[in-house]
Length: 96
Image (tube, rainbow, N blue to C red; front, side, top):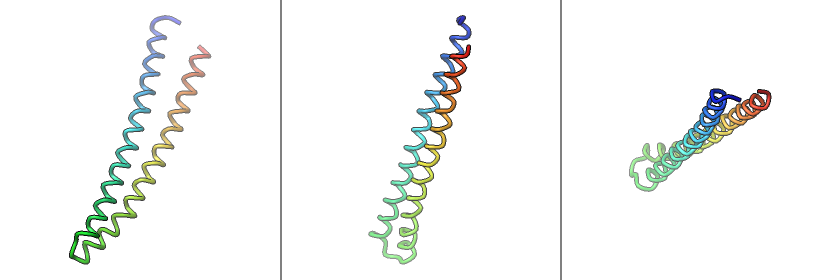
């Protein structure tokens, strides 16, 4: 393997690592949004004096759960894709 091929493989490995880290950051952002929505809903329920604000608070809690579920599903789908890319890169590296 010459220097150019080795550098190409190193770049691919670094790109995969960056993608994994970005996927984790995205999951954390989803969970952060979930927590913020849930806390806002609880706050509206406890502190509001208006009936419609209480309904908004009640609506925010299941929405926060949906955001968490979407984030987890998205994370797992992308993680499987990244793992497949890693396996393909390893197979290409062995075959070269």
